[in-house]
Image (cartoon, rainbow, N blue to C red; front, side):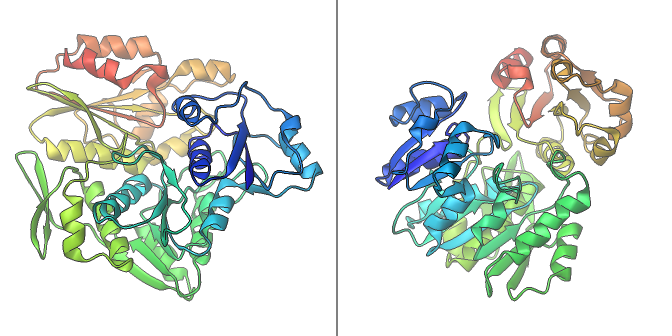
Length: 452
């Protein structure tokens, strides 16, 4: 089977291309620019396009399927050529569904926790040597790729993205998988560029529940009021199974969860991660994993990349980084580190996105989210505002929106780095939270400046 990827450099797209090549498909692709790690990964698998750009001559009637990435525009010349030839054009979630139509599809949705829950389930299945496919949005220890699509695996574990499928299909990706088992971890307004109101965002999760196959299963967070409301309003012919954060203890920096089979020591921490663990446990129950098997396997789970990920430490301080950008995730991450190290001063740095959705209405959702930090810092790369001809956000507006007069604001990488260099790190821990990469500067470099 011949498959062509338009925008092959996407984070999931390039891993899907590699997975299909390993499955024996003939794979080609194009993109106007390919960033790391996609560049190195595609090159290692002999799938890197010879040159950047779009080449309609690559598209012919011998191609069985075209997979369209979100990065491609409506007037993409390869897309136009494919439509002219009448070729079948898929978004990647559509194609994954087609490849998994005879498998049990487990789709993990929600505004936060998706990657960690998916990763926990994958870790348990791998430890138990079960055969399964997967689609996850992070690099995981023990997994070569973020996508596996095989012929024979009976189950596929999918991180269910709520962003648009492609320029041709404006539905959120998670609808296209038609889950047999679906999970909603929690809800907080996200993707304001395509969902201009919280209600419009919530509506996508109404549709997600309705997309579950008849007599399928919805697993949901009983501690999230919005999720509870959605579940209560739904009348679909499905099973519904709620979960709650389990009891846990923290002793000398070691978190253990209390279970019927005893105290289980963990390598992750924070209430939100304990909630994620309860979600993963409930999914594993539904796919036939026993309590003893789950807890024995989860003890060795170290977490997903950039999800409260350890960066560096010395005898007196520790540095973590986290892919936290929604208000609830920011609050949960700050609380987790403070709760784990209550005797340390917590310096928490959050990078806010510099986009058109960064207005007072949106920012108000962050109220009190940084209040558990002893030294709260907000970074916005104001250079991005200039490039987009947008008005910068004032420090006063940020302090008002976050309801915290102690917030220190920085709009340049150099200013933030100098501030960390001048700070005495003794007795302090550092938490980086960002959807991006702090203006292109390595968090490790920031951490080294702080620790030293």
